[in-house]
Length: 455
Image 1 (spheres, rainbow, N blue to C red):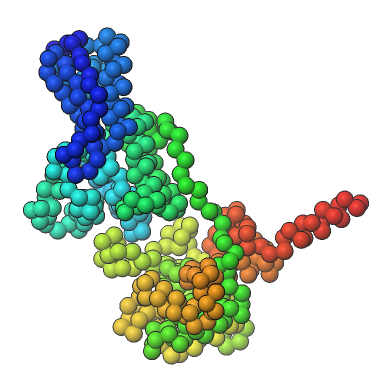
Image 2 (cartoon, helix red, strand yellow):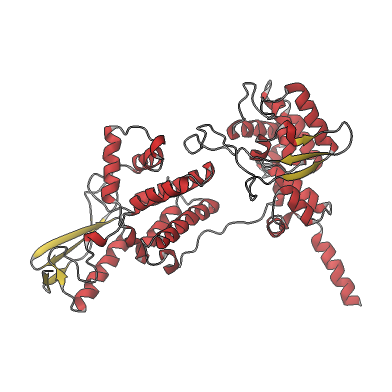
C-alpha cells in the first residue's frame, strides 16, 4: 500500500454542529487532512493516543485510510457491524426463546445499538432509533410490516453508522457499551436487576461471537467494570402474616363489581400454594384435587407468562410454557390447605371454568393482564391497610404473596427440601433468597452457642 511518514496530529475539538455532544479528531498524512468523529471524549482521546504511539514508533501511515499499519484493516476483513451481528443473533435465538426472554434481549439491544455508532450526519433521535429496532429490525421476517419512508431512512442510518463488531475489542468501546446498559432511556441510572439482565445479554452475545469466530476473545473479560449490586434476598418487610393475608383477600372481594371477586381465588393460590402469577394464570380444573374435607392437591403442568404480543408465538399476550426451572413436560405437586380448597370450590361453583379448564379469566374469557390484577391489588391494599402500611413495602406487589407463603412454611419448620419442592426452587437458592425471612434463627443460634460454652 502507499504510505507516508509525514504525519501531523492536532488536538481534539468539540463538534458544535452535532445535535448530540461529539468530538472530532483531526490529523494529516502526506499533506492530506483526515478527521474522525466520536460520541465521547474518552473514545476520541483513545484514538489520538493510538495515532501518536504509532507515529512515535515510526510506523508508516496508509495514504488511503490515513491510518498506521497497525490500525489499518482491509475492508474485506472488517467483519459484521455490531448492528448486523445483533440482528443475526436475535434471529438465531428467537425460535428457542420464551417471549419474555425475547423481550429482555431486545430491550438490552435498544440500549446497546444506538450507543455503538459513529456520529454520521443526520443522526435520528434515540426514540426513533429504538422504535425501528423494536418494531422492525429485531423481529422475524414474518412479523415485520412495511417500513414507512422516514423509518427506512432511520434504518439506513443505523446500518451505515453501526461500529464494526471488532471495535468492541477496544476496552474504551466495550466500556461505553457497559455504560449504556447502566442507564435508562431517560438518562437516569437503571435498576440493578435491569443492568444485570442487560449485561447477561451482552455477555452471551460476545460469547456467541467468539464461538462463531467473529471475535477472537470476549471483550468483557478485558475490562474491570462493577455493575450495581443486586439484592439476592427477599425483604422480610414485604411478607404479610396470615391475618393480614386474609384481610387482603377479603378486601379484594370489595374491588369493582366483578373483577375483584373473580381474582380472590387467584391471589389465594399465590398465598396458600406459593404459585407464581403465570402459574396461577395457567391453572386448570383438571390440575386440582378439591375434596369436601381436608387437604387438596394442585399438580402444576403449565404456566402462562404475559408478554407483549410482539414477542409471543401465538400473537396473544399469554403464551403457554413449561414450568420455570423445569424440563418441558415436568410437573410440580403442591398440597393445599383446606382454606384454599374451600376458596377454589366456591370460585368454580360461581364462575365455572373456560373450555380448556382454566379457572381464572375475565368475564369475556380472557386472561387477566398484570396491569389489571395489579390495579385491583393496590385498591385492596388501600382498603385493608392503614396509611402507614400502604406506604410501606408490605405486600406491595401480588408476587409478595408467594414470598409470604414460602416464608411462612420455612418458619413453621417445614424441611427446606419440601419447601423447595412445593415452591419450585432449588434448596440452595431457597435458603439464600429467603435467608432474611427466617424468624428466630439468631435466638436459637445464641442458645446453642451458650449451651456449648457451658459444657
